[in-house]
Amino acid sequence: MVETPVSMEVNLGGIHMKNPVNTAAGTFAFGQQFEKFYDVSQLGAITTKGASIKPWAGNPAPRMCEVTSGIINSVGLQNPGVNGLINTAGAYLTGLQQKNCQVICQVAGHSIDEYVAALEVFEEKASFAAGFEINISCPNIACGGAAMGSTPQGAAEIMRRLRPLTKRPLLVKMGPVNIPEIARALESEGADALSLINSIPGMAIDTTTYKSKLSRPTGGFSGPAIHPIAVRMVWEAHKAVKIPLCGIGGITTGLEAAEFILAGATAVSVGLANLYDPMSAPRILHELCDWAQKQGVTRISDLIGACKC
Image (cartoon, rainbow, N blue to C red; front, side, top):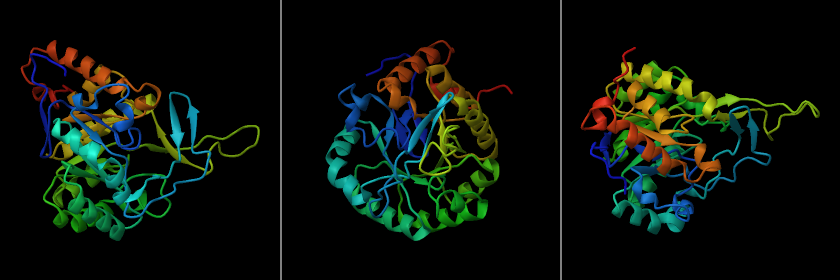
């Protein structure tokens, strides 16, 4: 447990976190895989890998390639389905929740009806979930995701269908497009918080074979290179809406996490760093605590949106 004279507690749209550090869906599986490295319960929250109503096999290999200052992935949201998640990880996630590490379950779907079906099962069976993150923005899904959530109208329609299904907090994972407009549309339909940003569509070509380095032409670009873009988009969203934000994108240090908070994020999610440094999340938490102590505040929440731009 991290001890600090500064209160690190934050409230992410009704999810009360003991500190602002969360993990990004897709790079942390269901959490238990990291227990061999550290006590995951010291984090404020984890976000589970996205789950759909039925299992998805994902895209064929190769599904990931390294590029300058990041990776491009085309995993395609491979997952065991909501019931598979609950059956394999439900006991662990219940224990994590009992240790005051909040569990946020990400909901995925190819259509609005699939989102509805998945959320209904989560609502019925996932008592360990403090809230749900709706992924409307994954760029690797050919017939959903980005298309449905890339306009204010499409995003609002998804939220309009899902909001009545649960009283637990609903977060929305936003893509890197039309941030102010889509953020306002989601807020108006009852979103409790926003997570941004998801990976940015990118492409890498093998100059020997002339083919994509992935099995598909494009994939989601993530990593340190997108961090300044993500910070700017969090800042834009903070100016556009009043609901809390979770900043995601290229965090490798506590100071980069602090940038998101200053830009207007209530919490942050560590993503790609988990894949090459399994100890990254607790290290970033310690570094963020050290930074907060030097700022002359009693609560880290006092620094949310304190950027003087």
